[in-house]
Length: 362
Ligand code: ATP
Image 1 (tube, rainbow, N blue to C red):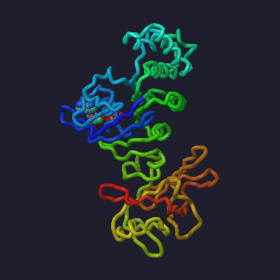
Image 2: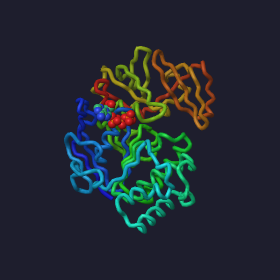
Image 3: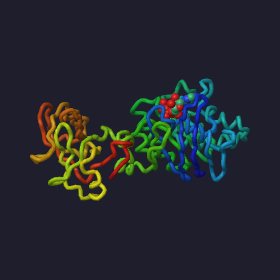
Image 4: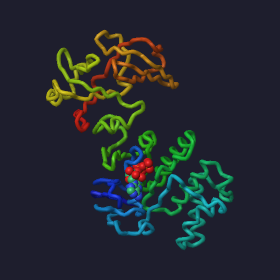
């Protein structure tokens, strides 16, 4: 096990493209850290630099206290699982699992023990003699994980390991990975573009966009206190409602938009910070669950365009002038499309952002 430390790590590809810019963070021993962001944000490049498969243009990377910038991948004591894992089709599960160890010249009884241990952990004991073609997709994925596991590395690097699986299998493998991590306690870095995977697996999450770290925090802190508009919009489904307007205070706080005025309530959280924004353009963020139908006449009045029931909850797609909004309600609400309803914003849970640059205000 090991602490991984990145200090101002940067990657410029030969064509001049800066794929990762000034990345600094630590991964604690035994931690499961998730790197998440949209396609092209630099997460694979970052992981490949940690693995040693990509050179580091500047900055330092250390594993277990040792700077490893110039250490060959095979000497970093890490194991990586890729999105497109390839099993050897002519080898059995046991041979696939043990292949890397044989290459490294491990003793046969050591290989046998490690393969048995991994097979037990991954519930593949009954499939050790099967060839990959005879396995289900989930079992193949577990063999791919097992090949990393048998190495007993200091650090696991997982690059979108579940993206080739169907939705149901992805869910069960997600639980499997969380369980394995709890059992083994190996320092793990997990790359995904899937926010649900990131939120459910990560003890901490690094959110990347355009090669830059946007925020590093626990899943709940990212959700409750997104550092900027990018993180606010990226995490949460349906996404946070973002309303741009002028902040006013008269009988409570209001956001004046071209469509009308949105009442924000009394906002007793931090009035001094917000007072500096009076009369100025601001972006107000409201999670769909914090926008609820109400019988109050002074609330925001919106047209219900589309009602999407998903079983345990219902998404109401609303229109407030030219602004689209989403409210997440309980199925017991019985809302019909085409109706006009009043909505209350939970003032304790409003997010405020600077429209220029997008940084969180409060
Ligand atoms: P995805 O989820 O699509 O895999 P990613 O977040 O993992 O994306 P990277 O693969 O790290 O992103 O790529 C980051 C950026 O660097 C992208 O804009 C990509 O086009 C660019 N890039 C990647 N490899 C190279 C390369 N060898 N030369 C030049 N640019 C590259």
